[in-house]
Length: 169
Image 1 (cartoon, rainbow, N blue to C red):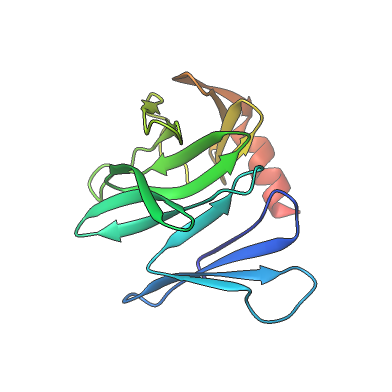
Image 2 (tube, rainbow, N blue to C red; image 1 turned 90 degrees about the horizontal axis):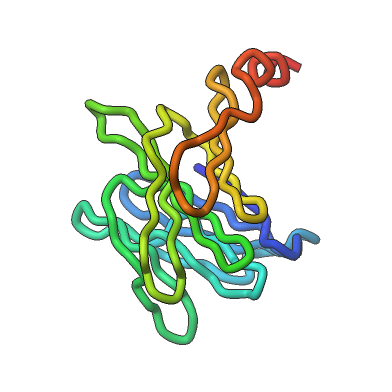
């Protein structure tokens, strides 16, 4: 298990598995039971509040942001994409640096047009959350930063000392 997250309605849990050869996402009902769906070859599946399903798929070093429905639709592509999230008509993905440069940024994606709006570099953050018009990025020891959907500079909203204190509890 490499990641897990709830659907916006709280009815299902998406769980990502990757054994180094194959990636897949299972969609489980929160009241228990076997997966209601499995998406082979995908990771970080996320359902928007209007029910659309999006996921990441890796293909020869390029990561595709895909809408999964009756047919698959590639919305956008990039490299080093991780942690896709959807909320209220907004998609955001964490773009991590390569091994030599561990700098991240948030890229907002228009699910209709595929237009990309990247933020400025935000450092080595590893967790992405969406709430309303903002993306929040966090990493233990580095604080929590907020970025508006217009991209731009990140604003620190929780200092690193507070994140370390809460993580220790």
